[in-house]
Length: 531
Image (cartoon, rainbow, N blue to C red):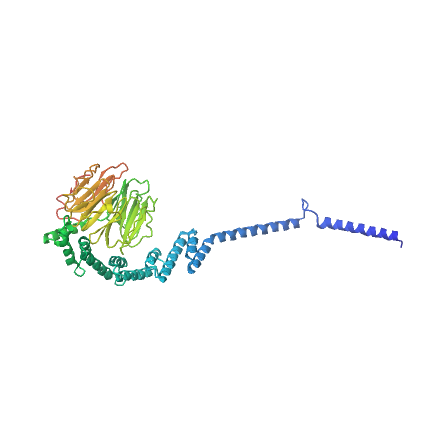
């Protein structure tokens, strides 16, 4: 075959090959378009569906990761605490959003730091951290153990005042009560020896029948009586007559027979509990302070400026009204014996003597002990110890005549105290001549005093005015605010007087209890004047 014929055959084969390739491309590789086959469309749909499912799965995983990010942080914080990397742990804890988790980790951190302080002999620094650890497992036991050790250190060093206060804070832990008294006695002896008779007298007086404290109290009082203006406590300690003691006992019995925390006044509202445990309210309800109709089993009420508080028989507490400063955050309080309300605060005393507080003001009451009752002024927390000594977060409310007290009340810059002999003391008002007093109520404008005859006396500052209630009779309880005063009569009705622009004095129909029948009740059914 010639070369020319061979080339012709080669060209024909190449041409056939290109035609075959073109036919194959057109059959299998035609671009997508309106003429695409049904099988290809199904393939595309499956691919898109799979991609969408994968995307949703990724979103779900991301959401789960976000939701569990707090748990990851919590675990990391716990790890840092276990490694004693406390500063880093604190930073991580602060970034956690869940409040419960955050509080629990903070308590764990406080406990761990306190333990580290104990190991480095920083006992005094560990105590406030154990306190901050709250209900963290083991915190209370460690607080007691550490507090006792610190008190022993103070006692060994001769710092009897600090030792007494530290032992006292431990209450019934081991022999802390007796230790506290012993150290207080030792400190009182020091003050007597150095000639601080006033302080020694009060310390020995507070110790009561411990050892020979009464004899030393009288010795200090005798020394002090030689000074001018020694005060009434000197005479009290030198000795009371049988008649005076009997009169004090009578007044005490009559005070205890009065209804306790049955009625309360806010700025422009009035609340009261009935003998059935229900709570009724009238006046301004702009903040919900009168929403008490569903309350039951209430044994005490208190009122702030715009909120109302109730104590249940089981020791729990309820509150309603303004909560701007957390003054109504009492839902977790338990084992409460008494509740009190200030303008923007709520305070309680538990059965263990602990003081609970929530609201605008923060008061340091860690050293307060043996508290009998409290009162909240606009700027300070006041109280009375079981031995009659005053307590106050502000020194301006207390004078040297505030002793032998059974009650103390404050409002704005005004305060007054009720003494066991039925007389009053005040930090600015003239209260002379008021005797046989059973209860008192302070306002910014003055003081009201309820006597043993059921009459209410008012003493006002010269620049102010108090509603006249001198015609009221047979009153057994009073409460007063800046705008009005209310009083419970012996037959359970409620009298009121003062401003009533919001209806705070609309108590005419109220009957809080039914008095027990008396032999002469039928002879004098109208025991009180109409309001």
